[in-house]
Image 1: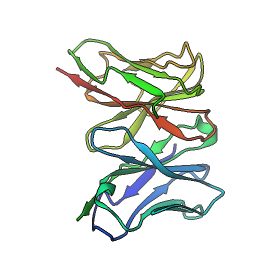
Image 2: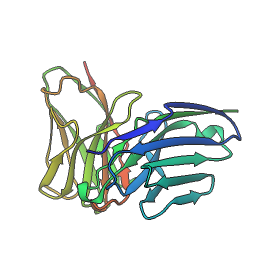
Image 3: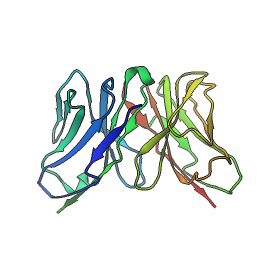
Image 4: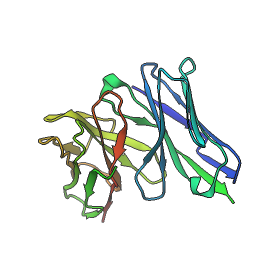
Length: 113
Length: 113
């Protein structure tokens, strides 16, 4: 089955700097790659997603890139702010596997003022 | 997100007891999912259902059971066979199983006492 690896597990940046989180997946049939942000004790919230027919997607300070050949995708956050501090999860799914998401292990991002 | 309701938010279980976590959605979504999250860990899939009266095991189904008698409801029973049930349980739904966005409920905290 699908396996998703996420790095780094923790990331500390200064306010205003950029943050990059990377994920690799194992099954080339995966075609949907969302990113979720989870604050302590709360539910994961979708922040951006990308499908396999697109190489890059941006939404204000957040962008995701996908390299299907290498089977990896990355989250880029620019001009980080303290409120960006949270745990970020990547995930992958295949349409013919019930749409279920397989998650990475998470990255705890800390943005220091 | 607001259309997925989980209850109770906090639940304490004595060893040897079965408990049932409720999940209701009013989004008219076909697919529903249950995930387990341990502290500092990612989300692992317990069960998922693509359509009423059908469900499939996820990666960690042992010690759990589900039913899908109605489109809007997908309750999860944590049985006494689950040896380490203390965790944060998240219910989720999506329009269908073809890789659409998955939305999460607010979660239920289960503690064994």
